[in-house]
Length: 234
Image 1 (tube, rainbow, N blue to C red):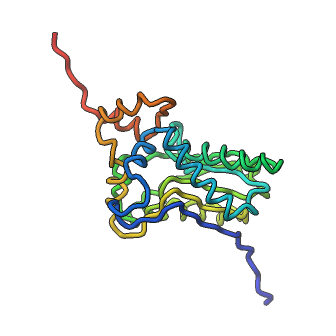
Image 2 (spheres, one colour; image 1 turned 90 degrees about the vertical axis):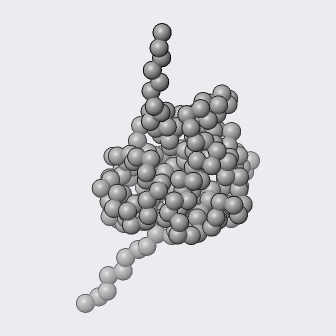
Image 3 (cartoon, rainbow, N blue to C red; image 1 turned 45 degrees about the vertical axis):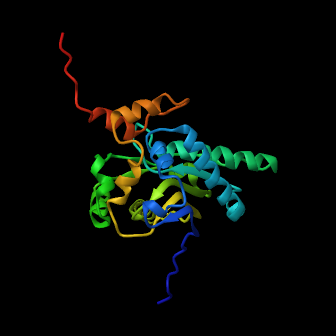
């Protein structure tokens, strides 16, 4: 029997920062926390840093490309904000070369997760993700390079989910997984502590919301909805 060869896509992974503990991280963990709760100021700074790193190292992947943030439902996640600034910076640099801009698309997911997701071990996350479905416009991205942008990679389960989706539908698009920070360790509680390094309470969030161009994210909305209702007398 003649062996059947399967075409495998070209895959690139890039992290602007890697870390194994919060106290030795090479980025400002308090600023990262502000990003998770909707700071567009931080999203712009982090997104530009990621874009410059990717452009300088992988300019060859940007001729027919689509920026795709981490899967979300109706309310955007922090990586959606980050991805907009990443794309804007990439397109500014492409425009200087009179090159075609990168495009934009979304990965939709059927369900969202409660706040405990950030505190789950890898196998527990994998089981939770297995119950979720993701969708994106396969016709639109056909023949294009896919740039999957996220804020942080802790266990890699979201990357695994996207890779499985691409394989399931026989999609051989070259693609890249680009994140601001990648965790190299086995403490599954670190994501929760990182997310809440600066924004811990509803009052912290209210202070942050005064920042110009603050955006509502799933994390900020959940924090407000979980805040205990105050009963006013009189």
